[in-house]
Image 1 (cartoon, rainbow over the protein chains, first blue to last red):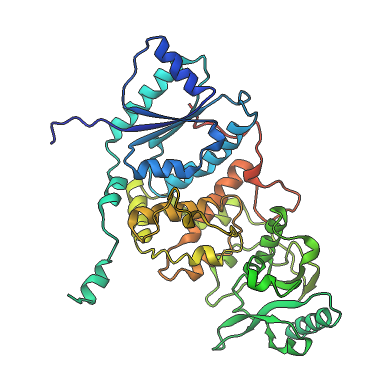
Image 2 (cartoon, rainbow over the protein chains, first blue to last red):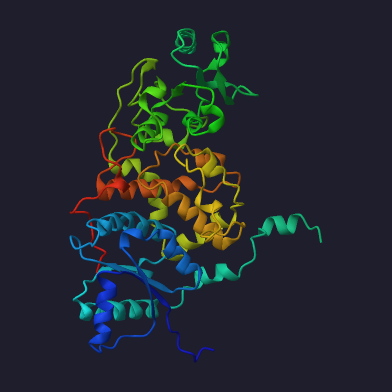
Length: 158
Length: 281
């Protein structure tokens, strides 16, 4: 088991108009990047509910990348600005709950920045690989509902 | 002050300005109070006011049962009045549909409630009529207002995780936190939706984390820190720490304090081009 190398699972939430096209460009440009990423294409970063990210962790993601258009370039004019506000408070909240902020990363990548996509995603994969699997969260999945220690011992009903 | 409050309530009911007065009444023991809904002028003696009036009555503005009673006059402390400002901003109530009977307050609870320790709204910031001696609202510096968070923010990542997991593991998903919250007013909460099921409905550690994080996040830039969620929590999860953390971030990043100024734009429904983006690659 210990000899199996850990490969992180990265979920990338990308906006249809910029970063997805940027990733596509990296592909058509035959650029190589690490294959740990699973891309989910969405119309706009402004439409990403923080629950998407929580769900990704619940389902076993080790790291997440959220990426969209550069400020001022949003296809819907202001979606990415709204998204940025959200992440400004959501990120510290997760950090406060003990989730390493390196596991959730954000970037602006335009449709012309295939190179930046490769660089960013490699960066995320490397960072998360260094952190190791998100055991804390993954453990929650396999736990039974908490019958707290005290209750279980004091109220032995057999 | 109680007499003055009763007199005001009686006047309002007699003149038919309002149909009902939401106020505090005596509880089952002297150190308890309970909400009362006065609809007849002769009942105003049921109203009381003392340091045990901890609750935020504005939660009754969102409920069907109490909405049915007609236009209310509502007794609010400075902190509760902040909810009125948020509800107005979020178009949940109309200004003319509620009569705000403010009371000045120099702290409630025995021992003093946490929310009162750094109070800067002794006199409500919105009211139609004020009962009690006006108290000059002090200015409290940023750090002092969020001092409660310091000891938790200092913890290491693992300590934070362990602390919150221990807390969330206690959650029995009774949803008292969102039922009591005057600002959790969706008819259908995200936890009630099951296609797709975003949050596990069972009291399982996995769903408990998503629920508690989501509940707090849905109040980001909105929560006015009345601490009712924490007070009603049957398993004593310090929910207000999460709310307070979000309030701190909102203030730090957007210079916005929920419920303080009716002219401020709601933090999460607007944006500025120069918003912080240090953490973006």
